[in-house]
Length: 180
Image (cartoon, rainbow, N blue to C red; front, side, top):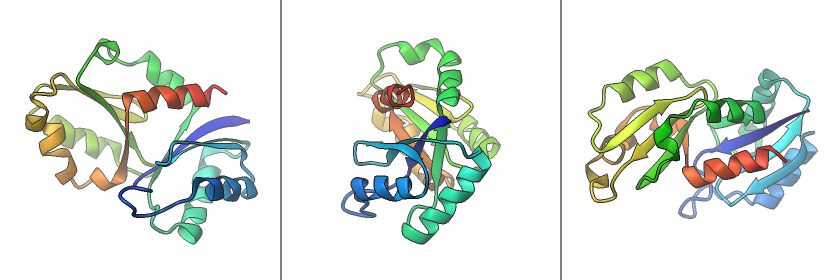
């Protein structure tokens, strides 16, 4: 059995794309996933399965298409993926910063294209790290946040609707819940 985090983009935000977590947990259990749990109301779901990653992506894609058609993109992160990510994080990730975010690649996203577009940005008071499953983005100062590429440019980029973002605290909690 492999434990996964399923990170869904854009649900329960501003009253749009409402998903009742208790109902989703039950539906995913009925789908055959085990030990289904959710964390907060913004699309962090944890479960175990014997399905391969390819089978799981296909199964979840069909499920969302049939039951939640507004969910068109999601990320899958296994416990092993998380642990590999943590071993390669740069030193700045563990330091105090104004903001730290994790931009998770969704299934099927052209990661190379995302990285090329992000590398072309003029970074202000910020740093990037490209991981296996996500881009880690740190902002040094709250005062300069409005001038950062993250704030000014990210949401305008074509791939923005194809990533799902979590802050550093949620990233840490994902790790805790994956280790259950």
